[in-house]
Length: 211
Image (tube, rainbow, N blue to C red; front, side, top):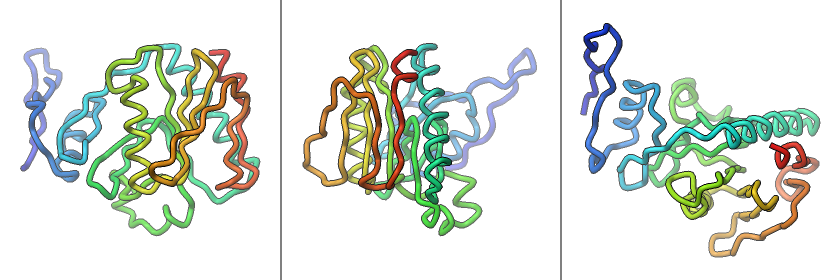
C-alpha cells in the first residue's frame, strides 16, 4: 500500500488523511501513515490494527516531562551506557507491533547495532526498561487497564524491567522480565530503583508526585 500526502484543503492547509479503523497495516505501511499524518498520535497492534492515542492532559504531561528530566539526570550521573527515549518514540517490537512508552531506556550497544535507517525510523527493538505514567482516567488507551496490557506486551517482547506509575496514589508497579510473574506494587513509593538491571540508576519521585 502506498499512502500519498493528503490533498490541500480550501484554506491552503493540509487536510487530515482519513483511514478506516478496521484497516490492517504492516509496520512499513504504518510508518507511511505516520509520516503522512505527523499530528496524529498512533500506535500499531501486533495484528496490524491502529490504536488511536489521545493527547495527555496538562497535569499528566507536566509529570511526564518531569519524569523524563529526572531519568536523563539519573542516566548521566550513573555514567551507564544507555540511551533515553521520550514518549514520541515508536519501537517496532518483535511481534510486529509499534508501541510508544512514556519513557524508555536502551543499552548503547543495542542502539549502535542498528543501521542509520533503522535509527531514523521506528527502531526495530524492544527497550530494556519501559516507563508508563497512568492518567486519572481508567478508560481508553491511556487508562490503567490498557497500560497494564501494554506493559505485558513489552515484557513478552523482551523488556527486562517496567515501571507503571500511579500519581494519584503515589504507587508504582514494577514489572520484571519473567513473563507470568505478577507485578510488584510499592505504595507509597518514593524512589525508582533499576539497580538490578542498571547498577546505580535511581530516580526520586517526590517531584513527579507533586505535579
